[in-house]
Amino acid sequence: MKRINVIIIIFLVLQALLFAYWFHRIQKQIFETRPDTVYIRTVPPYDTLMPAQLMTQLKLSDQAVMATLFQQSAAEYRALCYQAFAAARVMLDNDLNDKSVDSPRAIIVDIDETILDNSPHSAKCIINGTSYPAFWDEWCDTAIAKAVPGALEFLNLARGYGVSVFYITNRKAHLQEVTMKNLRQLKFPQVEEKHMMFRTGESSKENRRNEVKKTYHITMLIGDNLGDFSDVFGDKLVAERTKITDSLSQMFGRRYIVLPNAMYGDWEGALYGYDYSISDSAKHAIRYESLQAY
Ligand SMILES: [Mg+2]
Image (cartoon, rainbow, N blue to C red):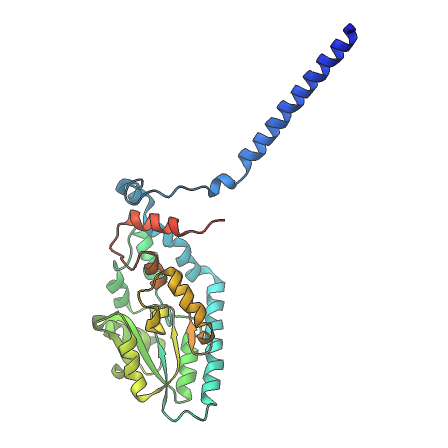
């Protein structure tokens, strides 16, 4: 082989090597800057990789920041509430036009995050690194909760048509007086003892609903938690709640009116099997484990 050919071959091989190296560098750069790695998480075993000291730094309550801000700052939250009560107006009209109803009409309404906005309580808990039931009685005692957008106008409208309003809440009985004070100041209708059904025993509202049903035709039920509508959701885990909700899809906006509440609710309890007594680190792990990434 001529010397010149050897030089050309060496030159080409060197060029190929140089190109391979450059290609490898570019690929590496692209891979390293891809956000995929952000999504790769390992779920720590409960109570082991998330020791108590670390949790005190992370503070589980901080995870409520976005939900609380959504309720306090997002105009979209208010829009959702107005939308819910607009649907309620349509339902009210339809029911008032139903001539087959021969009993007096009533609306069953929940209180917290349905007609009263308790986000300042959640904010207080976050700032103090704690959670419910901390500060709950203190907050209720202030009786300064604001009305959920649209709630006051709707319930007064319904009352104007002669529809009774029953407040069925899981606030405990010792909070009845201050709650009534709060509702009265906001000018909600029928803030009277016999229209208040506070929690005295079980958290299920079924018996209290049945009490109202004895005398009244229920025009609609309004709440932020599925338990405000029916006991069929009671103690059900996430998948089952979803399944039942899908099977009852026709009820929403027709008989049930749902208000948004991303701060708390049975939706959270369902994640823990309703055992709120588990440690913060266990809750943290379950929350991450429940995330569905692609
Ligand atoms: Mg509620």
